[in-house]
Image (cartoon, rainbow, N blue to C red; front, side, top):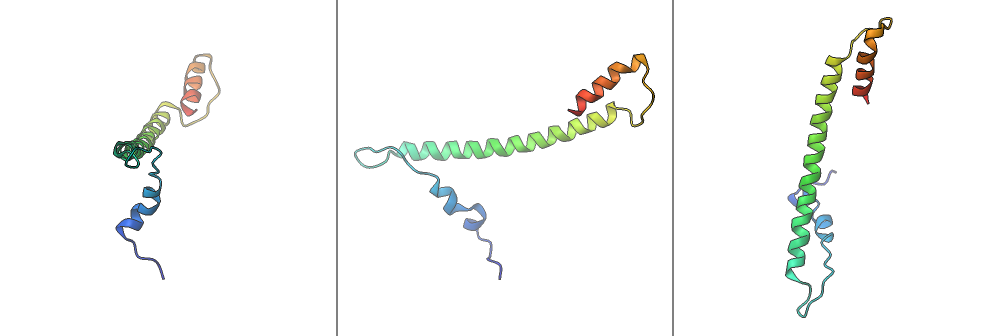
Length: 94
C-alpha cells in the first residue's frame, strides 16, 4: 500500500531540518543568530535555484523559437552571400 502524503513528507521536513547543523557555541549553547542565518540562506538558495531553473527553461524555449524562425528549413546549394546566414544559424544552434 502506498504511504499517504502529508505536509511533512511532501516537504521532506526531517531531511530539511537535519541540514540545519549549528557550528557555534556560546555560553548558553549555539547562537540564536546562527540558526536564523542558516534558515534565511537555505531559503534564499532554494528560491534562487527554483528561479534559475524556471528562467533557464524560459530562455531555452525562447532561444529554440528564435533558432526555428532564423534558420532556413530547407537545404540548398551554398551561394557566396549565404555564408553569413549559415554561420549565424550554426551559432544560434550552439
